[in-house]
Length: 409
Image (cartoon, rainbow, N blue to C red; front, side, top):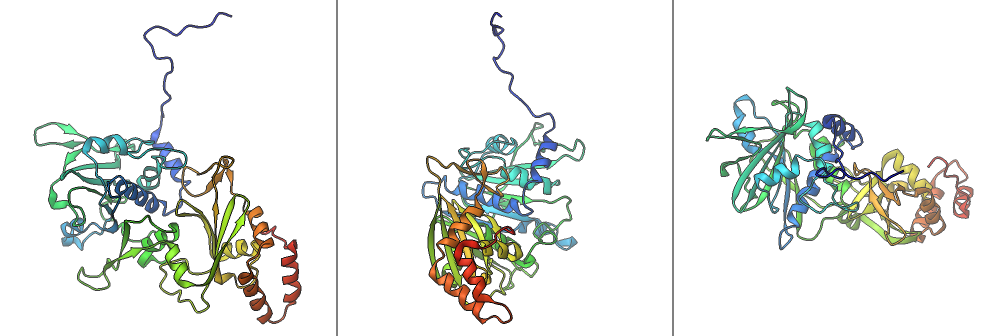
């Protein structure tokens, strides 16, 4: 058979396109956790700050108080917003990066930014739109991404300009600039699904609804890079001058665990490190700012993945050998990427993948049981011995002999 020749003047390959982008975004959104959009927009803000020469700045989750003041006659509508003091974007840059599914102003990679997270996690929850206000070199620009009520397509809303032209971005007056932004920075306003929705309120079923943003971000991040300060609003329903209506700093779990633990350490596992903490016995868990009981998570690039707490956390801790006292133990397994191990996450950023496979939790649990740190072993024995009505000595002997049945795990 004679080889076919490429037709002169035509491209060698016709690029693949997406026939129904709305369906694709909605389908990818189903793989996201309910509050995933908080992580994605926070991460975009952090990366915008890290593009500055000094890599220092603020990320602030707050109400859009300008919108609140404009709607005060109807009681004031509180729209959630995120503000960063990063590098900012021009109108053309926002059209280019925000309105493409797999596009980012940051370098894309399998281990880094995919360029899809905020789009698939946030826009399906906000059909009324996401409004981006960005300042670069002291000039303000704006775009409005929404789901068109006419075509049901996701995309940018067109703006009519005073000169009679129309474009998908427009300039924005400094009157709408948040106090935190000076010469550069970005504000994203989440409008929800209609104009009357208070998007700063926690979605139904969210833990700690009065401080849901703080709680989620603390449980998602281990720590933030030096020079990055993250804050979240509490008490937004109170008058602006009320002392309980304020911005609280988000620290991540490392600071909490360091301050709240009686002992800590690290166990080497196959291709991973297991960081462990024994929490103080009389720890105050009422504030709800952190995941304060026993739990297990995977640690990657200062973020926490696959966090298991509550009943699921108990099962996982038991698999790691903590059959008693699990409410006082936290374990973070940090996989180690190297030439033989390729570590990344799934597209929705909900799970880690080691060589494109789920993390080997069962194997890690068995190794941890075999190398149980003495302080945890002592805790398990003491709490087990103080219980009444069961042969705890036999249970503990079985556990540390390596015969613990982890099938429930």
